[in-house]
Image 1 (cartoon, rainbow, N blue to C red):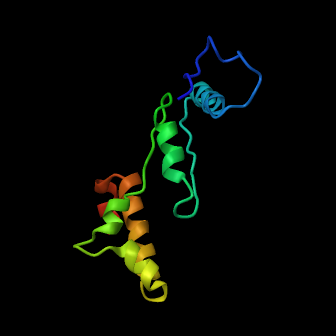
Image 2 (tube, rainbow, N blue to C red; image 1 turned 180 degrees about the horizontal axis):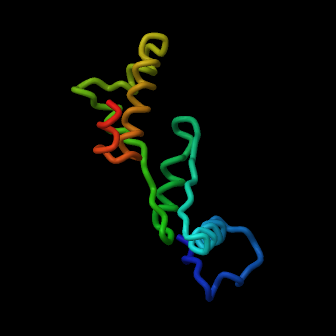
Length: 116
């Protein structure tokens, strides 16, 4: 893993590495006293989790991972597998459950329960 970027090594090279991009965004957020959000989208198996695990180790970032284990075991049913086996039958159910579980990850449960 590359070294973490900080004030002393920020100007070592004049290139845009992922670490320098995050460092710059963090500094901007601190100056504005506001956090910022970055959303990562991609197809299943495209490397979203690998990408996010890398950034989870960087300065002051908070990563919300997809709850894939919940999708693979809903009362003993693997919704992800069912969706791939019979997409016409299970896609709506799967996508609805994905939205619910992602909301649970991002929105605190006490707020979410107010809307249910």
